[in-house]
Amino acid sequence: MQKLLTSALLITGLSVTAQAATLDDAFKKGSISGQLRLGYISNSPDTAGSQTTTGGAMGGEIKFETAKWNRFQMALAPYFVEKVDALTGDGTKLNGDFFDANNESYAYLGEAYLTYTFNSGSLRYGRQKLDTPFINTDDIRMFSNTFTSAWLNMALSKSLTLDVGQVSTWAGFDSGSSQEDFKRASNDGVSALGLTYNYSDNLSTQAWYYNFDKAYSLLYADATYSMGALEFGVQLGSYSEDNASGTDGTVVGASITYSTGPLTLAAMMNSGSNDDGKSASLGLGGGNYYAAMDESTIDGLNDAKAHVLSAEYAVSESFTAGVAVGHFENNDASTKIDETNVVLGYSASDTFNVEFIHTTVDDVDPANDFSRQTLRATYSF
Figure 1: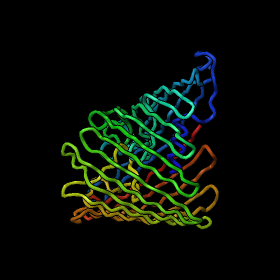
Figure 2: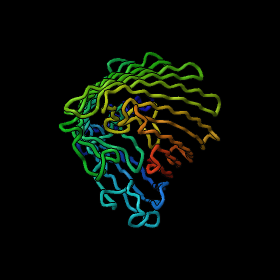
Figure 3: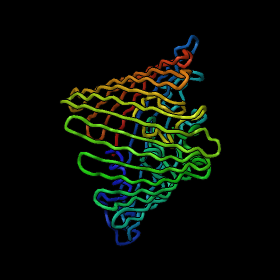
């Protein structure tokens, strides 16, 4: 929930922004922000004869945003990735998660938008980052997903926020092959309507409606309540199939988190109810279901059952270590997955952090077993 609230502030432009008297001043008083990232990934299948694949890259996103002029702002952000040959395998030993469809370096215009800000919110059009439950950045490789959209964010009161938007195309790792190319989002687009309500410092709720054109519609709601060291969450997703897309049914979820000093423990579950051959979807991005891990989710599982247990320990103010174990299966047990994640995080400063994830996946089909290591060092400015 905190992530959504932060994103809402970014979208509405409620942060302090320079004002300009003329268009020339708007450009002169503009700001530059972004991030630089070094990434490395290694994937080792457990089947005999399969080769370990590796990939290494340096990349960045550099955004220039004008100051406000007559309530308008413009922004451009090129994204780029450069292959690091010394960290990248050759031929069949190359891991392509960081690269384009030809496993090469690439560059593209990840963000390019115009924002109009009014007293209680903003309207933004163009290529932009969005973070809603089922249209989200899901920053799991070199870059976040970005979306070509018209998006309205408006504070109806101190506690209630409205989001209305239409996404036509999207790019990024989750969008599929040629992640740098903007592709049609669900045929003729995805429309979204959301309300976020913060009842108190302890209770927050949200409700969303999505229409994925010629595929399915989704009603989603969740609530989070904190009570001292405990935090509870419940969620519900209800899908209505369109055009025989195979996405239909309901998903329920629950979570509980307990924090004491440097230790945080959590338990999460999701359960699906679908007709034969039907399943849930994560939408555009990584979805918002509680039981999700580095690799495994309930996406595509019929009558999914998923459970995740995790523990995180703050070794110091800068270093955290965590472990999570999860189990995912479908109705007839043709898919049964056990996954373990070991996550290490180091924040050298407010602008520089390093994260390492070790992932192990054990499937009912041994041919799908693998282990993966992902390392990312990110400098934000």
